[in-house]
Amino acid sequence: MAKIQITQIKSSIDRKYDQKATLKALGINKMHRTVEHEATPQILGMVKKIQHLVSVTNN
Image (cartoon, rainbow, N blue to C red):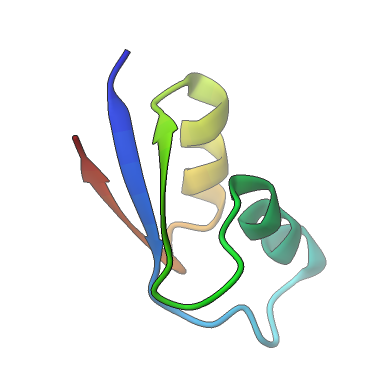
């Protein structure tokens, strides 16, 4: 399965609780940190929910 890299580009300050929880569930805890995940439907749904806070690149 394809892998994607997810990088946080905007702050989670003053965001809704569910958006903060999604960032935490993806393993992103600070600005400009990058994590790599498999491109499963669950992960892609999480990324779609916070697409305004992150940058996604394909590997």
